[in-house]
Image (cartoon, rainbow, N blue to C red; front, side, top):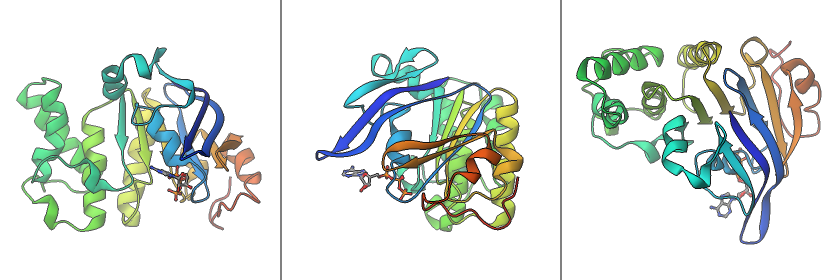
Length: 237
Ligand SMILES: Nc1ncnc2c1ncn2[C@@H]1O[C@H](COP(=O)(O)OP(=O)(O)OP(=O)(O)O)[C@@H](O)[C@H]1O
């Protein structure tokens, strides 16, 4: 479980998160919505200690993140909004293998994870390609594959679908749903609410640094009016 307890955070004295309390259980698939600047990225960056709260605390599986950053970072896999922020190697295969290698896994297991992760993002067999020669959408897919290959207890994804075409987006969403069905907690910040009713267990919407809506998709979507969150016509529960 990832638990935010009364978390507040300000940048240059401007409050961005105000007294946010919520928890993401093992096996839950939660979408985090909210207008630009509502605090989604800031909240996500607290889940593995990239930011520290000014007040309140964040716990991962009962342990305060501030007390054990290494445990938090190995339990919480994160996909950043800008994929270039998370690449560590020159080629697709090397980059995805980097995390599992650091876990000390044997070669066969590392190769299995790399292959499976690339299949999930519709990039099977592209291990040897250079990352800097990929399109933006392909780089996003590699970033997602890197997080999936770690098989973390929780996955936190910040706008991971930028530049992804519809089949790749759908394939990743379905994989996230199946991971959550198997016990992974998934927290996904996105402006794209298509498929949310079908796949997510819960929708949280931020507004001005606070949790404004939190509930099952059908109830939550009905409450999004006025929060500058666009719900596509095709999204019906
Ligand atoms: N490092 C920083 N320094 C100063 N202000 C920041 C910093 N990071 C974020 N902010 C401000 O905090 C507010 C919330 O930003 P955040 O990125 O959390 O919003 P968001 O909901 O993720 O937005 P978006 O949908 O545009 O990604 C914004 O006003 C932003 O300008």
